[in-house]
Length: 243
Image (cartoon, rainbow, N blue to C red):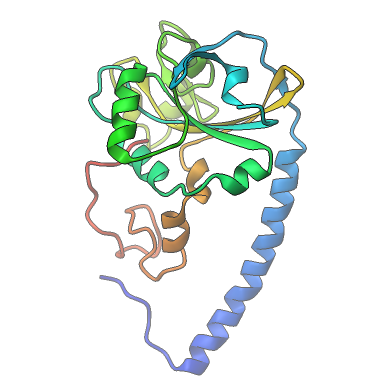
């Protein structure tokens, strides 16, 4: 394994202080990027989406639970599956109390395409208390580009078309039998009863919301993924990774 060099404390401190300068610059860049995200325009959601949740049928407005903002995690759970995506499960396992999020007038909810009965059973197994809704037979997953089915909508994921993905090395998922689901996160803002779509992110976009990737990024071995640098610090890949 390719481990870090062993140096004196003074040499380490000099390297650490140099990196600190870069970290502070990145923090300012991140703050500026967050400002740009908040300055994005928004789109009125005028399609009536239907969901099934713990209380029965629901519309998108119901998912807000009376709050002004809604964060939806598009959890991969296809109708024919007997369990949810392992990576999505790991993501949700790390979400703690939503008290402070609710204090900021924001609701968090999971949405998946599997029938609600499967979601409820899996939720019980995991011990989650987050609201989880089924979008089964709704256009919601298709419109927000987390269910890919070219017989329904054009192939677009993470703002790339199928032609774009064909040119990339990380495109194995493109060849799956359709329809298939991928993960993502979408944000909505309510103004009265009018709902607006403000943001969506896919792929590695939701990484910063979870503890494990953020903590591992501070360690010498990192996330131990094959794509990371320096090379030679990754563990063998598992079959549990979802795109």
